Image (cartoon, rainbow, N blue to C red):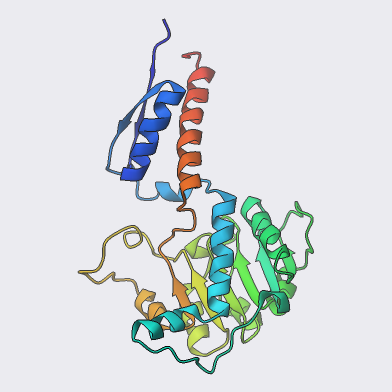
Length: 268
């Protein structure tokens, strides 16, 4: 008789636990759910759904282009006047996509529908895209969006020198990894109005802040509060992947990977 496989899941949230309980019966496994995380860095190792992150990336672009942060702040104070800053349309702009893996390609696919010009940079030309050099992309793009993995050679790939290359009204979008951007250099560029704005779903030094309740304490982050006060900056807590589809896909893939590993050992 085949022995039933038991999978132990660490750092399991309430909605994840419900999905594991539902899908475990479909796959014929049992699960042990543990709330404590095995490592605070584990969330970074997940391969998030490209569609989820791509949708969120385009949303952030549109929010910056239409000044949504200032609009919402105004309406919350009962101010419904139109301000002097008119929005821009994606069809009139050039978007530079840094990294053309699964997520970068999904972003480019969505941008096609807006009719904007899309430039791409990647060391491997693995997609049917308009590839240009890194410097040309920075100089020519109205929006620069990051979709590369974090490695030693990509850490702070957007720093003071790169920000100097960008247009004065250019927008920077980061839904990939916080350390791709030199945050100190970004804050300086924003204060000096060397770029037009930024939307950050990830932030260098986010560990211990994002995914935590911090309303009754200071975060201790050297730049977070400064960024949050800027009208042309949007900060969200690493939630581009946070959709129903990703939850089901992640749980299903986790169970399948565990079963495949057991099969490789001859235990199933």
